[in-house]
Amino acid sequence: MSDQDLPPAIRALDDRAWLDLLLKSVVSRDVAGTTFPAFPDPETQRSFVGADGAATLHEAFSFYTLLKDRAAALGRPLAHGTNFLDFGCGWGRYLRFFWKDVGAAALHGCDIWPPALDLCRSLGVPGNLDRLYHWGRLPYADASMDIVMAYSVFTHLPEKPHRHWVAEIARVLRPGGIFVLTLEPRRFLDFVEALPVDATGWEGDLRRHAPRIPLLRQRFDQGEIAFMPSGGTGDFDGALYGDAVVPPAFIDRHWSEWFTVTEYLDEPGQFFQAVLVAQRR
Ligand SMILES: C[S@@+](CC[C@H](N)C(=O)[O-])C[C@H]1O[C@@H](n2cnc3c(N)ncnc32)[C@H](O)[C@@H]1O
Image (cartoon, rainbow, N blue to C red; front, side, top):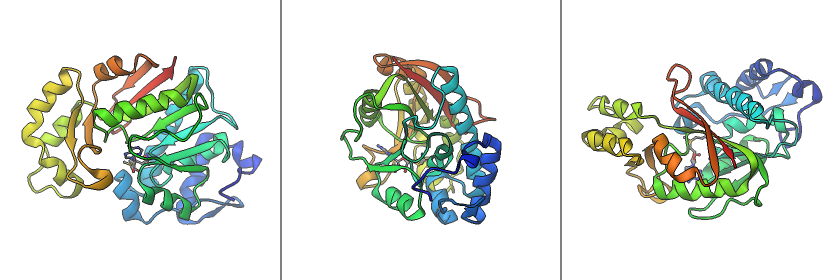
């Protein structure tokens, strides 16, 4: 079922009722006569998105409803057949949400890390899945997408990959198309500075950068990306991946050729990260 469209009765549900079905699907894949995609084990979910189960769906729901609201306000309401791309789709958290709105055929997810796509396939995540390659092209035609989203992806990219992928996203978006993404706001630097010395995991890796925070704040305030490289290798090499705090001034300077920014929302009570809404010229 997950490769196909949902029954009309489910497609007609309002967003809150749809969230309730997705929450039920955490417990059992068979909900309302439909087989839903499975979930990765809780530890795998957390390794991508920092939370699991109902908590991670509630977090995603806020972004899902914001995106739909802003797309409609900008004259691009989501409908069955709206071509939708989730850039950096991970284990398919968002693909399962937008399945209701655009249908499986118009739903696209891509990721640079092959195990993420393997995971989506093994879970039965709906939509078309594509692998990306560093410095490669998005495997979509020019002006073929109506909506692109990227949640917690540009929060990890240094300047060169950031600029490369924004140019690609601009290429595949139709004029008037919408790009909604998250960015780490300036307060992320305060968070890193305040991490305890015995922090572990991702926070422990970040803690190494605490002595550089004053310098990184200066970079941010000068309109440059404040970047903290990961200590990883391969796809997670520090030249490709880490934690990136992107100032709106950087966006203004490097995106204006293609995009009009309509909103930069930094509301810690609503979203962990800042949300940027941009419309393709
Ligand atoms: C923090 S996870 C977020 C996953 C998903 N967007 C979500 O919110 O559930 C970041 C994802 O971005 C992917 N990623 C990292 N660098 C990327 C790049 N340059 N291009 C595309 N995807 C990338 C990672 O493999 C990972 O799946």
